[in-house]
Image (tube, rainbow, N blue to C red; front, side, top):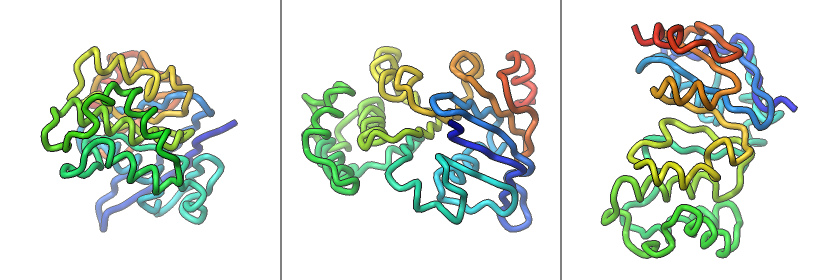
Length: 223
């Protein structure tokens, strides 16, 4: 089953082209690594895939939904983990996850399972403002998978995590999760090791797509 299909995708911000001629195909359960320097269009692509931005041209199909006409079909089926945790700093971890559980009509047991999975059950009642960056990122990962989405959009998901915490999250957001993943990262070697499909962007334009190339070709994106 094809999870993501892009053909000639374009997106502009006024006169500025953010994405042009992007085409890729990702099967269910595969990992797509999106690579490129800052400003290459990586985050814009994630927002299009999440249904948050409308493409201006080309075709985008995500989990069988044609975008933007069928964006509503993605509700509750996509998880996002990025630089910002999308959590409320004045609330505790448990309160944050309980809020998101209500949005997805989940019961409280799912919250407790998620807290335990990221090793935050013992500190779940402390306000986020009192927690370290790594702890908040672990809670953000719990939020991203709370509703068990088949598709994960990951923008530098290991930011702020030490190696032990990154390993702890592997069953949730890594290849071991079995989910289709779109991974944006500057860790070239790590991305290539995880990717089934790689997409290289430079100035919003596709440089390669398909089987992951060698690391040297990827590094050309950053020059």
